[in-house]
Length: 122
Figure: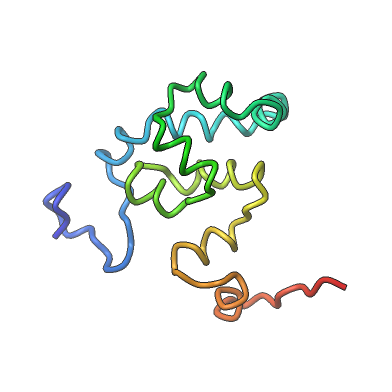
């Protein structure tokens, strides 16, 4: 039973994106969604601090973004994985990196559990 909703929507080991989490992460998710536009990605890359301040992100949120701590942004910050994927595109943290982080694995370990072969740098 989820403490937040009172419904049995909790999946063990998974952070369920509830309405309460959505409300908590509103500014964070607006920020991440803004990165879908090339001019916003360029502005963020040029001056991350100013760009994040434009979205009134907390110091904690800004720190976790800089640290690329997607797991904390989802679990504690109310971030939507669908929005944070946009952040990953700017910071170089792809979906595989995010999945590995959430499972506490390296990207290599994570990819071994996928149906996709890991590309080797040559």
